[in-house]
Image 1 (cartoon, rainbow, N blue to C red):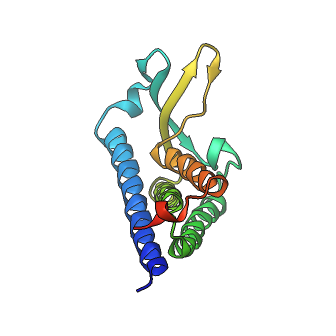
Image 2: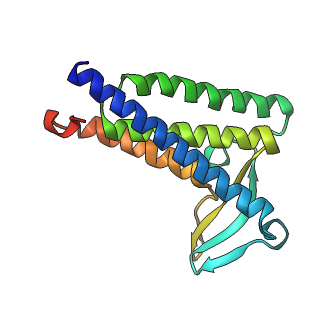
Length: 169
């Protein structure tokens, strides 16, 4: 096996493990909050002056865009997320960069986590809400955070590619 193939294989495994970790953390947090607490009945829960745990069912995509309240829209978004995860898995197989592999893995884990929400609940369960004074950041979940951080890692890797010595497995 060549160094490039070994690096690609290592990056692929790292990306898959990252995807699995984001997916498990996302689903565990959602299931614990939905079924293991009274959050659904007693929200919001202020935890810090700038952070609440709340309940928002998102029928759209990130930032609440493209709200879909029909079964057709729900399944379209589900298929779109799963197709994106498949596409990214093929991309993951081609990368030798660990940072890019982790970024792709985070996006895959987040996309699959949110797709599973749509399948099980008809919408994505969002619960983390940051706010300061009158400014309110959108409500999100671990899958959303994984997607955002994953994209940032991929962009970072594009703007600051590692040198050959940094990418050896």
